Image (cartoon, rainbow over all chains, first blue to last red; front, side, top):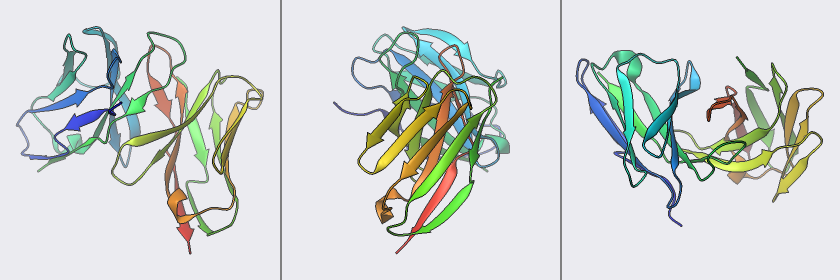
Length: 114
Length: 110
């Protein structure tokens, strides 16, 4: 099976712009989660989608949003970019609906805001 | 909220030596994941431990879960350059989210 894919891998944006990142989960996985990784804060949970519904959201401002399509592919959007949004954005997919489960991560999108 | 603390934060060992990384939770651990990350890349799933006392091995890496101590350890035997990277422990933070430790950066010197 192909792994989790994320596009683009690298992105440079200017403060105030918006950006959309894409994640394609492992075939058959219906849960997609997004994480932000920075040197200072480490890995932090953004949100999780299952069957096109957001089930949980982390402690991030409303500028961060996401969605999931019927084929389980997911996008996350960040509007009005700030310098502090520079980070590695990781998505993970899982086949389980609930409970203790394995999450498989993609290679990430490195976002740089200038 | 649950917090995970890893120790040490950074580790430099000579190739062929054994090493241990610890992950301590602020709350009861009902399960724990170990991941490895190459710099700037995604996380590679290593192991998942679900029960207290459980021990799993993959190649030269062994992980144990001690529920009473709210702790997990990752042990690498006869380290190799391919083991270099950042090791992260993660725990179920509820509501389909993972909470991670800050990571342990492992360097293997030839």
